[in-house]
Length: 201
Image 1: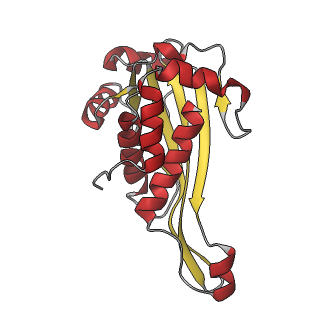
Image 2: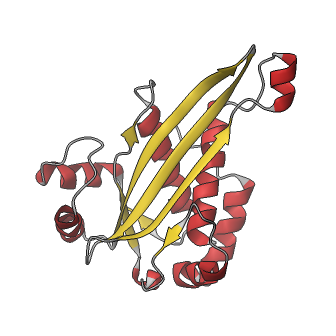
């Protein structure tokens, strides 16, 4: 899937982060983290300059869902200009050298090795739980549900985790029994926007 232009929310996020950077943005999040978001407050997020986004787990019926969501996530994270996101090909070569399969969640030791091999400060993994059309009664709409985790490569520990679900059949569409909601590409961007807001809030 070709990455689309950043949404207005991501554009605002990029402008906000351009000056203070990742450390300040995450420091501001300390007092307003929602229950679905985890952050390790002992972590120096200012040390994270380069990130590798691993292939996401796919728990949906759409064989391409994880690749599409990962592509959108990587491009929108890069668009914030807060960190450099390693190209997918370099990540694939690194995981191949370590014998990690598609959609594999690395162990603590593998995270540390991958960080050294790819020269990245953090590794992000993700799971796509829902992607595409859902039906409720006679109504249909697109939904995307995804979670992501960030591991610091010095120790291999999780330092951030978040989840988002966007789209679905609204009450109006359910009552009328009609198709509604946004195209799946737009819903994917909405879910990723939410994840990035959780990361940088």
